[in-house]
Length: 358
Image (cartoon, rainbow, N blue to C red; front, side):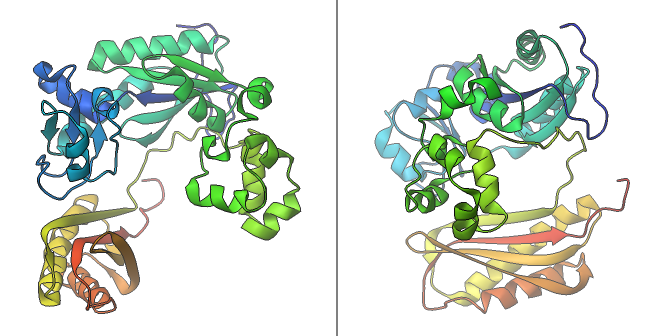
């Protein structure tokens, strides 16, 4: 264990932040269960049938070489991949179990752990040797879970998150405030965690295309274009500034949702409503397991060919009854364009906040 490692106090800023990211997590879990798949292009998504509608949840590194990735339709991926590619259905319980073990390993170190998802977390530490700690974490994860990981080291969460990409796969990357301008200055704004293609286009309209240009832009100009809160925040991103501490507060689900992709477009909106009721029943079981009723219900519709719309409403009072959640979902369905065919439908229930201390 590196010297001077101690667990930080609640809300305490730490000297170093590490971002731990499991390499091709879902695909790697599948390879652990089926070792004969090692080295093959693996696609996990939908029901594992590339002739059906569905999207990729993850692709192994071998598959990514062919230009496929998360969110791509399975049918599109199948046209790009070789015949020996392996297609698997999503097994959520298996990934949740593997993730729980990963987080258990991280918490075995005297550090603060902020979970970001199944396969990634921030680690806050005051060690005097973050490189050694990163390597120890990677080794412990591999020994305990059989899964490889990459780690980013930074002065804050923004830097650590970006640094992880410098170490992938199976390595350690580092990015600090001292190095920020030299390493990030000439990169496009999309290289920043938190800036996607849509925001990048808005920045481009201002003549801002690089991280350095964003960092040097007057705050007022950004505030006028992107809003009084988001404008200054984007400038801070450009400067590599992030003051948020690693928060070890246990993650609590805010909502649960279910969705389904129809293999044949639905034209009969009575069928759409029936599917909404079916999904609402599943969501009701999900929130019942949390012990918290729903305060708000939402629906997601994807029209043919691929246009998505979402609607939501607040319930008159929180409820855990399937009939109430279903009725709200059907009401929202009634607000949508019934002249169009439906490719995908989702129902989501946002729960009331848990009692203090839970």
